Image (cartoon, rainbow over the protein chains, first blue to last red):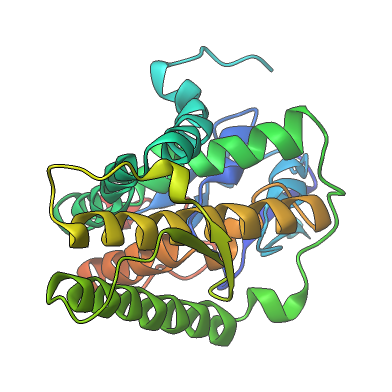
Length: 67
Length: 206
């Protein structure tokens, strides 16, 4: 059963990779050195990446019903 | 969760070694050119921020101090510090100071100025550092560049440490000039970043 929340990356991402290192499910990667990208299928919304992000650009969002 | 450690996970040691070597002989400051060139080369030819993501010794050093050793307050980075205006403003300022340092090196090389055997902290405070210069086989401008470059490296490390303590361990990464520059290069190379939420299709990777 998928989690209720997932991590979403905002436009102020600096692509430092801090979130990649702390993600327990390896659900985050850096897209071509530009922005962090979250695999929503893998993400369980634990929030570790959001706490680690120095740019404060990761937020947890509720999944849409049926998504 | 314990991930398998790789050799590059220990690169944090490079930061204290580099600063330590420069304390005894300023010419070691030239090694810092590696930290300048490598990220740019990786961004230009590899199109990624692999240096920041994996090999940055300073980032690892700040993570170690702020994370594992819990020296950071872990408070959110101030909003103004996260803005593009501040990031790019700091990049421009950093470049201006860098070119000023190059100009001073040129003046020493041309014989118009004596070598300044000091380290300039925060681009303002002159700290005596004469014990690290013993007179060498190299021209004076080589040592002058080393003093200037070491000043930049020491100042940026100190700023990184200050914001690490005050905010998050890697707050420095938010406005690190090298990080800003490499991200800019990657953006120019790859075009517009994908819109948030497209990760599941992975179409951009094909």
